[in-house]
Length: 269
Image (cartoon, rainbow, N blue to C red; front, side, top):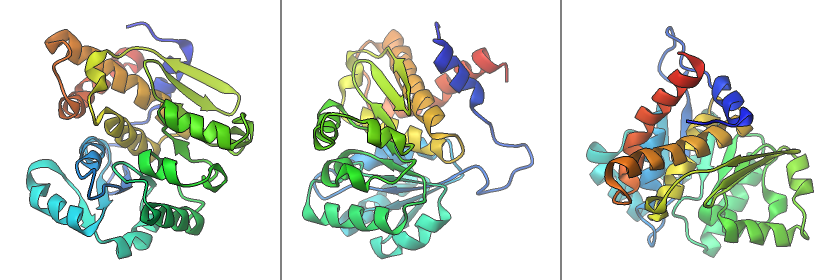
């Protein structure tokens, strides 16, 4: 495993749970996502996040909440909320991931716009449907954005062809692709790797969940760089075992093993 100096430095910044810590002290994440159309997307975000933080709260459309409740025992470790409970849990959570599986509807735009305006000082990771419906000026300072190329181009064009004002506000951009790019203020970190198996639906939702879980206790740039690197390293690990024949659930399941191995190699934990 060959690491760039930037990736190595960020891996060494990762802090592990204290041996004397108690429930809730190692991260609380709120995931707001899902829709009638994309009912499974946020499942992968929840699945991976539950492996890294103490508590995961989840809010979706009512029909999807029912689906989550039915499958919770088999798939998810967390607390399902109704949407009217979201404000109370935003103030409790260390970080909020919003967007996985959300559609590009007026309802999504209204919800996202209100929440980020009402709670601008929280740690936000903004993904997928949330990225596609609100204006760049509405992104909270210090948030992490996780666009694919099309979403990035939309933001770039709305900003008049420059991300400088966005980055000056402490916003971190994780551009997903064959190579990922993390933009944080004046720094750009390139993360290579991955394989055709990573084109499966849901791999971006896994990445968003991992980054958000890390952002609960790590700094934004570190969460984005390490999340991207571990996601791609896990894809390569799976490809060595089964070629391109794996899915997003396999990816989420293998990330803890790969993450722990990488941390032990880099930081001697």
